[in-house]
Image 1 (cartoon, rainbow, N blue to C red):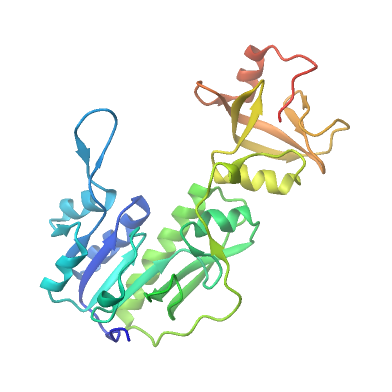
Image 2 (cartoon, one colour):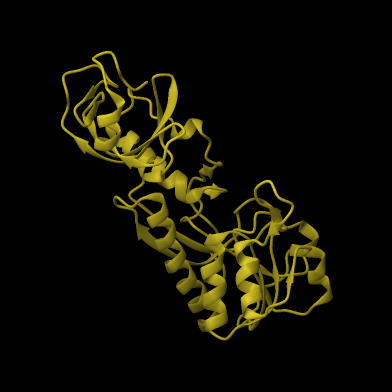
Length: 293
C-alpha cells in the first residue's frame, strides 16, 4: 500500500540533488507553494583540500531560506501534503511511501527509459521524441502511474540542450499540475526500456558504426576515439558525404565512416584543451599513416 495522493497539495517537501533539480524548485517557490523541507545529497569534498561544497539544490534552498536536511528520516517529524522528487539520487524505502505521498518528475515518456539516464539514452537510441512524466513514486523503479506528461521533440539537440529543454517543460508542467489539482494517475502502458547509466564505453566512437550513431554520441558530449595510442575527444562535428577510404581515415577536416563521413569542428587531444579541428590539425603534423581507431 502507498499513501493516497492529495488533490490540491500546498505544503511540499522537495527531494533533489543535482543542477537538473534546481529549476523545478525555483518554479515551485515562485508559484507560492510552501516548501517546508528540502532533502538533498550530502555535501561533497571537492579537489584535494578538506573543504566541502553543497549540492546545487542545497545552494538554492539556502538562498531561499528553506530548511534543508540530508536525512530522509527527518520527514517523519514534519507535516506536509506531498513530496516532489526530482533527480534525488536515492531509493525511497517502502515504509516512507506507505505514509508519504510522493511524485517524481521524470525526464522521459514512461515506460520508455525508466532509470538513471533517460535523456542520454534517448539521444543514443536515435529517438525522435522524448518528454517528461509526473509519476507516482512506487517501490519498484519508475513504475508508478502518471499524473501528467508532455512530449518534446529531440531533433538535433545536444545532450545539454535537450536536458535544459526538458527541465523547462517539466518545471512548468509540475507547477501547472499542482495548481490545477492532481489528476488520477494513469497506469503506464507499453514495453518498458531501461536507461542504464552512461559509461565511457557507450561514448566510444567505433568507425564501423553508421554515421548517425556516431553523431548521436557526439551530440551527447564526451565522445572519444583513439589517435596515436591516446584518447582523443570529438566535441562537435557534422555529417558529410562518403569518402572512398577505410573507416577512420583522416582526409582534410573529415573522417571516413561506413555510410558517410564526419566533418570535425571541435576536438580535444589528450592532456590538451578543447580547440577547433583546424587548429589541432595544423600542429599535429599528420602523416598518411594516421587514423582514428
